[in-house]
Length: 75
Image (tube, rainbow, N blue to C red):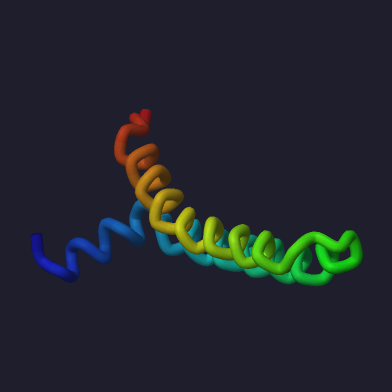
């Protein structure tokens, strides 16, 4: 598969839009927990763990979305 056709297929399946939406939502969630958790004396490692899970979840979300878009039947 040529590189150009690979990126065209990603664009066709709206994977770019999902990546941007995930990044914005993950950033907002990370900012929110970084502001709120210290008020409730939640340890800083919990904030780091949640940010790490957000980062790890990005490729998983992209693969799941691309797979769902691939198996969808257009009528």
